[in-house]
Length: 456
Image (cartoon, rainbow, N blue to C red; front, side, top):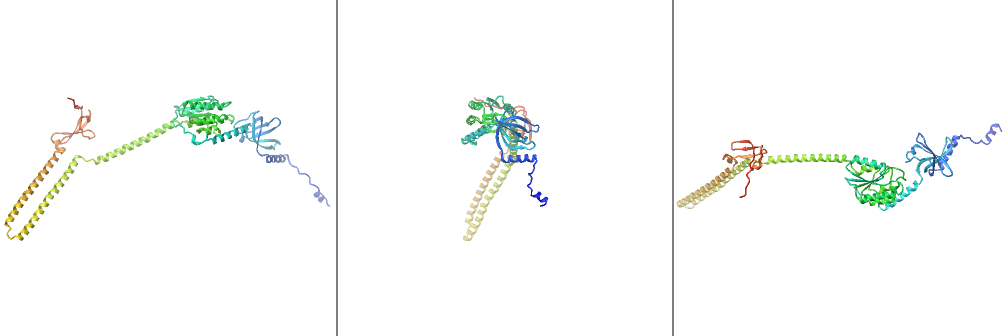
């Protein structure tokens, strides 16, 4: 056996790894076998680096572990922990390979006991929802023009200043009534409910604002109490809930008639800015003005159309005169037609008689007499008809306004062309038109005298 074969058959030596590889392998093993979990303990040695990362130690009575929470996670924590705080962290067990330190990579952090509070929150929410306190059908609409707004909050709350500033800016004409109450601390929920009940009993305001600034779930827990929810549900005044920041949700938000993300937003929802109402009124006034102008224009056009259809008395007389002449022609024709027919009949009968009677002298004399009498009768009838026609013509001539003017009368009209029939239609220092038989004249009115009827 040669030396090379002996070396190849010899047992192989154990492999050698670096410290970095070892730490990385351990870190991967820890992360693989220990998933995310909630760990409770007390904060100590808390440090916030310039990068925004949090470094602290989590300990209990018998052990401790290092923890790190990077800036991307820390900015959503909602509070900054301090040494001695009892907290619960949702963390991943890992190893910091650079130093071989066993540590927790914290994903989320909350104060100890928050999990129990959230469970109580969910249980109360489910209970009240089954009772119908969250139903949209029981929520009341807000008044469109509130005159008085009530605020249930603490007089020392910063939210109160924000609400008052917003109301003063948007609707300075609205009255504000404060119903002071603690919004945090022992028995705060009971006192909040008493303030809401007091506002409902007094009925002094049109809408009620329930306000508080942001905070942790413990700070806002007074608004998650059942007594507050039931008092809101039985309140006779519409309530707007403006508790916490936009991400904060409380039981009061679900029961209230309207939820606002912040106290300032609650004030904005309670009233419409006076400038907006004024702008709306200005727009409606402008629209009304345009509609009125259109109406006046349409009426003016209708008046012009009616004035063109109005016929003057002179044209009416001319029209009636033409009708009269037509009737006269028809009457003359109607009179001549029977006479012509009678003459034709007479001639025909005369011919027949001549054919039948050899001697018709006597009958001719008699017939001549009848013809004479008939002619005389027709002449008298024509005379009477012409006399009646002359009488009608004379009556029409008498009704002609021109003949009245020729007898010395005058026709007076005002500046608008209306006929003046009474001195009450005249006014001093105005001009009237006096129409005479041969023309017209403009006459100024110095004064007007009205003859009053007196009782005997």
